[in-house]
Image (cartoon, rainbow, N blue to C red):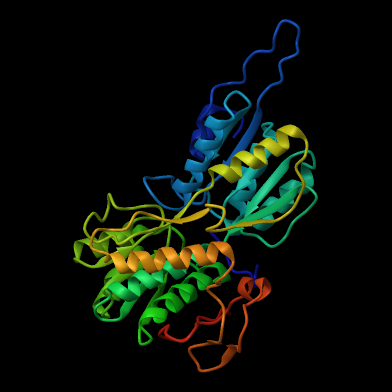
Length: 373
Protein backbone atom coordinates (compact mmCIF):
# COMPACT_ATOMS: atom_id res chain seq x y z
CA UNK A 1 0.00 0.00 0.00
CA UNK A 2 1.29 3.40 -0.82
CA UNK A 3 1.42 7.11 0.05
CA UNK A 4 1.78 10.11 -2.22
CA UNK A 5 4.82 10.07 -4.48
CA UNK A 6 4.97 13.80 -4.55
CA UNK A 7 5.30 14.26 -0.80
CA UNK A 8 6.65 11.71 -0.65
CA UNK A 9 8.75 -3.63 16.23
CA UNK A 10 9.83 -4.46 21.34
CA UNK A 11 12.12 -5.70 22.52
CA UNK A 12 12.59 -5.46 26.28
CA UNK A 13 9.63 -7.55 27.46
CA UNK A 14 6.81 -9.69 26.13
CA UNK A 15 4.11 -7.20 27.06
CA UNK A 16 5.78 -4.47 25.07
CA UNK A 17 6.14 -6.78 22.10
CA UNK A 18 2.47 -7.67 22.20
CA UNK A 19 1.50 -4.00 22.46
CA UNK A 20 2.71 -3.38 18.91
CA UNK A 21 1.61 -6.69 17.47
CA UNK A 22 5.04 -8.31 17.30
CA UNK A 23 4.24 -11.95 16.78
CA UNK A 24 6.90 -14.66 16.56
CA UNK A 25 5.64 -17.12 14.01
CA UNK A 26 8.41 -19.68 13.70
CA UNK A 27 10.18 -21.84 16.26
CA UNK A 28 13.48 -20.75 17.68
CA UNK A 29 16.62 -21.51 15.73
CA UNK A 30 17.83 -25.07 16.19
CA UNK A 31 20.77 -25.53 18.50
CA UNK A 32 24.19 -25.78 16.93
CA UNK A 33 25.68 -29.23 16.61
CA UNK A 34 28.28 -30.41 19.07
CA UNK A 35 30.90 -29.45 16.52
CA UNK A 36 29.40 -25.96 16.23
CA UNK A 37 28.95 -26.27 12.48
CA UNK A 38 25.17 -25.74 12.26
CA UNK A 39 24.23 -22.39 10.79
CA UNK A 40 21.36 -20.58 12.52
CA UNK A 41 18.36 -19.72 10.36
CA UNK A 42 18.06 -16.35 8.71
CA UNK A 43 15.67 -14.18 10.71
CA UNK A 44 13.21 -12.51 8.35
CA UNK A 45 10.88 -9.73 9.45
CA UNK A 46 7.69 -8.48 7.82
CA UNK A 47 5.87 -5.22 8.52
CA UNK A 48 2.20 -5.00 7.51
CA UNK A 49 0.10 -1.84 7.31
CA UNK A 50 -3.21 -3.49 8.23
CA UNK A 51 -4.37 -6.54 10.20
CA UNK A 52 -3.72 -9.82 8.38
CA UNK A 53 -7.37 -10.78 8.67
CA UNK A 54 -9.02 -13.24 6.30
CA UNK A 55 -8.43 -11.47 3.00
CA UNK A 56 -6.81 -8.39 1.53
CA UNK A 57 -3.42 -6.76 1.04
CA UNK A 58 -1.68 -7.86 4.24
CA UNK A 59 -3.33 -11.29 4.10
CA UNK A 60 -1.74 -11.95 0.72
CA UNK A 61 1.69 -10.74 1.86
CA UNK A 62 1.41 -12.94 4.95
CA UNK A 63 0.43 -15.88 2.77
CA UNK A 64 3.65 -15.27 0.84
CA UNK A 65 5.60 -15.22 4.11
CA UNK A 66 4.09 -18.56 5.14
CA UNK A 67 4.90 -20.08 1.76
CA UNK A 68 8.51 -18.91 1.98
CA UNK A 69 8.75 -20.30 5.53
CA UNK A 70 7.50 -23.68 4.35
CA UNK A 71 9.74 -23.85 1.32
CA UNK A 72 12.84 -22.83 3.29
CA UNK A 73 11.99 -24.79 6.42
CA UNK A 74 14.87 -24.81 8.89
CA UNK A 75 16.73 -22.12 6.98
CA UNK A 76 14.57 -19.15 7.92
CA UNK A 77 12.67 -18.01 11.01
CA UNK A 78 10.10 -15.27 10.47
CA UNK A 79 8.42 -12.54 12.49
CA UNK A 80 5.45 -10.48 11.39
CA UNK A 81 4.17 -7.20 12.75
CA UNK A 82 0.71 -6.26 11.62
CA UNK A 83 -1.37 -3.07 11.69
CA UNK A 84 1.63 -0.73 11.74
CA UNK A 85 0.81 2.86 10.87
CA UNK A 86 2.91 4.60 8.27
CA UNK A 87 5.22 7.27 9.67
CA UNK A 88 7.08 7.35 13.01
CA UNK A 89 5.47 4.12 14.27
CA UNK A 90 6.76 2.18 11.29
CA UNK A 91 10.28 3.54 11.78
CA UNK A 92 10.27 2.31 15.38
CA UNK A 93 8.97 -1.13 14.38
CA UNK A 94 11.51 -1.54 11.57
CA UNK A 95 14.36 -0.46 13.87
CA UNK A 96 13.25 -2.94 16.56
CA UNK A 97 13.31 -5.78 14.03
CA UNK A 98 16.81 -4.83 12.94
CA UNK A 99 18.00 -4.58 16.56
CA UNK A 100 16.59 -8.03 17.27
CA UNK A 101 18.84 -9.59 14.64
CA UNK A 102 16.61 -9.87 11.61
CA UNK A 103 18.94 -10.09 8.62
CA UNK A 104 16.19 -9.52 6.05
CA UNK A 105 13.23 -7.20 6.51
CA UNK A 106 10.30 -6.71 4.13
CA UNK A 107 8.37 -3.46 4.57
CA UNK A 108 5.16 -3.90 2.65
CA UNK A 109 3.59 -0.45 2.34
CA UNK A 110 4.61 2.53 0.27
CA UNK A 111 4.50 4.87 3.26
CA UNK A 112 7.29 2.83 4.88
CA UNK A 113 9.76 4.01 2.25
CA UNK A 114 11.54 6.83 4.09
CA UNK A 115 11.47 5.05 7.48
CA UNK A 116 13.00 1.98 5.81
CA UNK A 117 15.79 4.04 4.28
CA UNK A 118 16.50 5.78 7.59
CA UNK A 119 16.79 2.51 9.53
CA UNK A 120 18.77 0.89 6.71
CA UNK A 121 21.42 3.59 7.02
CA UNK A 122 21.83 2.64 10.69
CA UNK A 123 22.04 -1.11 9.95
CA UNK A 124 24.16 -1.53 6.79
CA UNK A 125 24.52 -5.30 7.35
CA UNK A 126 20.74 -5.83 7.26
CA UNK A 127 18.99 -6.37 3.93
CA UNK A 128 15.75 -4.47 3.33
CA UNK A 129 13.11 -4.98 0.62
CA UNK A 130 10.53 -2.21 0.32
CA UNK A 131 7.22 -2.71 -1.45
CA UNK A 132 6.39 -0.12 -4.08
CA UNK A 133 8.96 2.55 -3.45
CA UNK A 134 11.12 4.50 -5.84
CA UNK A 135 14.14 5.12 -3.58
CA UNK A 136 16.86 2.60 -2.80
CA UNK A 137 20.23 2.20 -1.08
CA UNK A 138 23.06 -0.36 -1.13
CA UNK A 139 21.08 -2.50 1.34
CA UNK A 140 17.56 -1.47 0.23
CA UNK A 141 15.80 -2.81 -2.86
CA UNK A 142 12.28 -2.16 -4.09
CA UNK A 143 9.66 -4.50 -5.48
CA UNK A 144 6.23 -4.08 -7.01
CA UNK A 145 3.78 -5.73 -9.37
CA UNK A 146 1.99 -4.71 -12.52
CA UNK A 147 -1.37 -4.91 -10.82
CA UNK A 148 -2.82 -2.90 -13.66
CA UNK A 149 -2.52 -5.95 -15.94
CA UNK A 150 -5.07 -7.81 -13.82
CA UNK A 151 -7.15 -4.66 -13.52
CA UNK A 152 -7.46 -4.38 -17.29
CA UNK A 153 -8.74 -7.97 -17.48
CA UNK A 154 -11.17 -7.31 -14.63
CA UNK A 155 -12.43 -4.30 -16.56
CA UNK A 156 -13.26 -6.51 -19.53
CA UNK A 157 -15.35 -8.72 -17.23
CA UNK A 158 -17.09 -5.69 -15.74
CA UNK A 159 -17.74 -4.23 -19.17
CA UNK A 160 -19.35 -7.41 -20.38
CA UNK A 161 -21.39 -8.02 -17.21
CA UNK A 162 -22.60 -4.54 -16.27
CA UNK A 163 -26.15 -3.87 -17.44
CA UNK A 164 -25.93 -0.16 -16.62
CA UNK A 165 -22.45 0.34 -18.00
CA UNK A 166 -21.33 1.85 -14.70
CA UNK A 167 -18.82 0.43 -12.23
CA UNK A 168 -17.86 1.77 -8.81
CA UNK A 169 -14.27 1.90 -7.56
CA UNK A 170 -13.43 2.29 -3.84
CA UNK A 171 -9.89 3.66 -3.75
CA UNK A 172 -7.30 4.27 -1.02
CA UNK A 173 -4.90 7.11 -1.80
CA UNK A 174 -4.62 8.93 -5.16
CA UNK A 175 -1.12 7.69 -5.90
CA UNK A 176 0.13 6.30 -9.21
CA UNK A 177 -0.30 2.60 -8.38
CA UNK A 178 -3.96 3.13 -7.50
CA UNK A 179 -4.52 5.46 -10.44
CA UNK A 180 -2.98 2.88 -12.79
CA UNK A 181 -5.55 0.37 -11.59
CA UNK A 182 -8.48 2.74 -12.05
CA UNK A 183 -7.36 3.68 -15.54
CA UNK A 184 -6.55 0.13 -16.65
CA UNK A 185 -9.91 -1.09 -15.33
CA UNK A 186 -11.67 1.67 -17.23
CA UNK A 187 -9.79 0.94 -20.45
CA UNK A 188 -10.70 -2.73 -20.10
CA UNK A 189 -14.37 -1.88 -19.62
CA UNK A 190 -14.43 0.48 -22.58
CA UNK A 191 -12.67 -2.05 -24.83
CA UNK A 192 -15.92 -4.03 -24.80
CA UNK A 193 -18.36 -1.20 -24.01
CA UNK A 194 -17.13 2.16 -25.34
CA UNK A 195 -19.74 4.03 -23.33
CA UNK A 196 -18.84 2.46 -19.97
CA UNK A 197 -18.14 4.74 -17.02
CA UNK A 198 -16.27 4.27 -13.75
CA UNK A 199 -17.11 6.28 -10.64
CA UNK A 200 -14.51 6.61 -7.86
CA UNK A 201 -14.74 7.32 -4.14
CA UNK A 202 -11.43 8.13 -2.44
CA UNK A 203 -10.88 7.07 1.18
CA UNK A 204 -7.48 8.68 1.78
CA UNK A 205 -6.86 5.60 3.90
CA UNK A 206 -5.85 2.02 3.23
CA UNK A 207 -7.81 0.20 5.93
CA UNK A 208 -11.09 1.56 7.24
CA UNK A 209 -13.84 -1.06 6.84
CA UNK A 210 -16.67 1.28 7.88
CA UNK A 211 -15.71 3.91 5.32
CA UNK A 212 -14.99 1.28 2.66
CA UNK A 213 -18.53 -0.02 3.15
CA UNK A 214 -20.05 3.46 3.02
CA UNK A 215 -18.11 4.25 -0.15
CA UNK A 216 -19.43 1.13 -1.88
CA UNK A 217 -23.00 1.95 -0.88
CA UNK A 218 -22.57 5.49 -2.19
CA UNK A 219 -21.36 4.17 -5.54
CA UNK A 220 -24.28 1.74 -5.74
CA UNK A 221 -26.70 4.61 -5.12
CA UNK A 222 -24.97 6.45 -7.97
CA UNK A 223 -25.84 3.61 -10.36
CA UNK A 224 -22.88 1.23 -10.18
CA UNK A 225 -23.87 -2.39 -10.66
CA UNK A 226 -20.30 -3.71 -10.38
CA UNK A 227 -18.08 -2.79 -7.41
CA UNK A 228 -14.32 -3.10 -7.22
CA UNK A 229 -11.79 -1.58 -4.84
CA UNK A 230 -8.21 -0.80 -3.88
CA UNK A 231 -8.61 -0.96 -0.10
CA UNK A 232 -7.40 -3.46 2.47
CA UNK A 233 -10.56 -5.15 3.74
CA UNK A 234 -13.48 -7.07 2.18
CA UNK A 235 -15.96 -4.41 3.37
CA UNK A 236 -16.75 -2.96 -0.06
CA UNK A 237 -17.33 -6.43 -1.50
CA UNK A 238 -19.52 -7.42 1.45
CA UNK A 239 -21.62 -4.28 0.98
CA UNK A 240 -22.09 -5.09 -2.70
CA UNK A 241 -23.14 -8.64 -1.84
CA UNK A 242 -25.74 -7.40 0.62
CA UNK A 243 -27.17 -5.14 -2.07
CA UNK A 244 -27.25 -7.87 -4.72
CA UNK A 245 -24.56 -6.10 -6.74
CA UNK A 246 -21.76 -7.82 -8.63
CA UNK A 247 -18.17 -7.41 -7.45
CA UNK A 248 -14.59 -7.94 -8.54
CA UNK A 249 -12.43 -8.00 -5.39
CA UNK A 250 -8.82 -6.95 -5.23
CA UNK A 251 -5.80 -8.51 -3.46
CA UNK A 252 -7.56 -11.78 -2.51
CA UNK A 253 -10.19 -14.19 -3.76
CA UNK A 254 -13.10 -13.08 -1.57
CA UNK A 255 -15.79 -15.47 -2.71
CA UNK A 256 -16.41 -16.46 0.94
CA UNK A 257 -17.61 -12.89 1.44
CA UNK A 258 -19.50 -12.64 -1.87
CA UNK A 259 -20.55 -16.14 -2.98
CA UNK A 260 -23.21 -14.80 -5.32
CA UNK A 261 -21.79 -11.51 -6.53
CA UNK A 262 -18.08 -12.13 -7.09
CA UNK A 263 -17.35 -12.46 -10.79
CA UNK A 264 -13.60 -13.04 -10.40
CA UNK A 265 -10.85 -11.29 -8.39
CA UNK A 266 -7.48 -9.73 -9.08
CA UNK A 267 -5.20 -11.62 -6.70
CA UNK A 268 -1.62 -11.06 -5.51
CA UNK A 269 0.93 -13.84 -4.97
CA UNK A 270 4.23 -13.19 -3.17
CA UNK A 271 5.49 -16.66 -2.17
CA UNK A 272 7.85 -17.20 -5.09
CA UNK A 273 9.34 -13.74 -4.76
CA UNK A 274 9.84 -13.88 -0.99
CA UNK A 275 11.42 -17.33 -1.28
CA UNK A 276 13.80 -16.21 -4.00
CA UNK A 277 14.91 -13.11 -2.11
CA UNK A 278 15.52 -15.06 1.11
CA UNK A 279 17.46 -17.68 -0.82
CA UNK A 280 19.60 -14.97 -2.40
CA UNK A 281 20.41 -13.56 1.04
CA UNK A 282 21.22 -17.03 2.39
CA UNK A 283 23.50 -17.67 -0.58
CA UNK A 284 25.20 -14.29 -0.34
CA UNK A 285 24.16 -13.20 -3.82
CA UNK A 286 21.50 -10.58 -2.98
CA UNK A 287 21.89 -7.22 -4.67
CA UNK A 288 19.82 -4.04 -4.46
CA UNK A 289 17.86 -4.17 -7.68
CA UNK A 290 14.20 -3.38 -8.41
CA UNK A 291 11.71 -6.15 -9.12
CA UNK A 292 8.43 -5.67 -10.95
CA UNK A 293 6.35 -8.78 -11.68
CA UNK A 294 2.98 -9.33 -13.27
CA UNK A 295 0.78 -11.88 -15.03
CA UNK A 296 3.75 -13.52 -16.71
CA UNK A 297 5.45 -14.16 -13.36
CA UNK A 298 2.27 -15.32 -11.61
CA UNK A 299 2.56 -12.42 -9.18
CA UNK A 300 -0.80 -11.13 -10.43
CA UNK A 301 -3.58 -13.58 -11.30
CA UNK A 302 -7.32 -13.76 -11.77
CA UNK A 303 -9.37 -15.94 -9.43
CA UNK A 304 -11.70 -18.56 -10.97
CA UNK A 305 -14.67 -17.09 -12.79
CA UNK A 306 -18.19 -17.22 -11.44
CA UNK A 307 -20.55 -19.49 -13.35
CA UNK A 308 -22.56 -16.43 -14.23
CA UNK A 309 -19.74 -15.11 -16.46
CA UNK A 310 -20.48 -16.28 -20.03
CA UNK A 311 -18.04 -18.64 -21.73
CA UNK A 312 -17.27 -16.17 -24.50
CA UNK A 313 -16.27 -13.54 -21.94
CA UNK A 314 -14.00 -16.03 -20.17
CA UNK A 315 -12.43 -16.95 -23.50
CA UNK A 316 -11.86 -13.29 -24.39
CA UNK A 317 -10.23 -12.54 -21.02
CA UNK A 318 -8.01 -15.61 -21.23
CA UNK A 319 -6.86 -14.64 -24.71
CA UNK A 320 -6.09 -11.09 -23.63
CA UNK A 321 -4.24 -12.37 -20.55
CA UNK A 322 -2.08 -14.56 -22.78
CA UNK A 323 -1.36 -11.59 -25.03
CA UNK A 324 -0.32 -9.45 -22.05
CA UNK A 325 1.90 -12.22 -20.69
CA UNK A 326 3.61 -12.72 -24.04
CA UNK A 327 4.14 -9.01 -24.59
CA UNK A 328 1.87 -8.93 -27.62
CA UNK A 329 -0.51 -6.51 -25.89
CA UNK A 330 -0.15 -3.83 -23.24
CA UNK A 331 -3.06 -2.27 -21.30
CA UNK A 332 -1.66 1.22 -21.82
CA UNK A 333 -1.17 1.06 -25.57
CA UNK A 334 -2.58 2.97 -28.49
CA UNK A 335 -4.14 6.39 -28.21
CA UNK A 336 -4.82 7.45 -24.64
CA UNK A 337 -7.02 10.45 -23.86
CA UNK A 338 -7.71 11.71 -20.36
CA UNK A 339 -11.20 12.50 -19.12
CA UNK A 340 -10.66 16.20 -19.82
CA UNK A 341 -10.12 15.49 -23.52
CA UNK A 342 -6.33 15.92 -23.49
CA UNK A 343 -4.38 13.43 -25.55
CA UNK A 344 -1.81 11.75 -23.29
CA UNK A 345 -0.44 9.35 -25.91
CA UNK A 346 -0.95 9.25 -29.64
CA UNK A 347 0.22 5.68 -30.29
CA UNK A 348 2.61 3.02 -29.08
CA UNK A 349 3.00 1.80 -25.50
CA UNK A 350 3.19 4.08 -22.49
CA UNK A 351 6.68 3.77 -21.02
CA UNK A 352 7.32 2.67 -17.44
CA UNK A 353 8.14 6.20 -16.33
CA UNK A 354 4.79 7.41 -17.63
CA UNK A 355 2.98 4.57 -15.86
CA UNK A 356 4.90 5.11 -12.63
CA UNK A 357 3.94 8.79 -12.48
CA UNK A 358 0.36 8.56 -13.72
CA UNK A 359 -1.63 11.46 -12.29
CA UNK A 360 -4.76 11.73 -14.41
CA UNK A 361 -7.96 9.85 -15.19
CA UNK A 362 -8.49 8.32 -18.62
CA UNK A 363 -11.60 8.98 -20.62
CA UNK A 364 -14.51 7.15 -19.01
CA UNK A 365 -13.66 7.91 -15.38
CA UNK A 366 -16.20 10.32 -13.93
CA UNK A 367 -15.07 13.43 -12.07
CA UNK A 368 -11.97 15.54 -11.57
CA UNK A 369 -8.66 14.02 -10.61
CA UNK A 370 -7.92 14.77 -6.93
CA UNK A 371 -5.10 17.25 -6.51
CA UNK A 372 -2.97 17.27 -3.39
CA UNK A 373 -2.24 20.59 -1.63
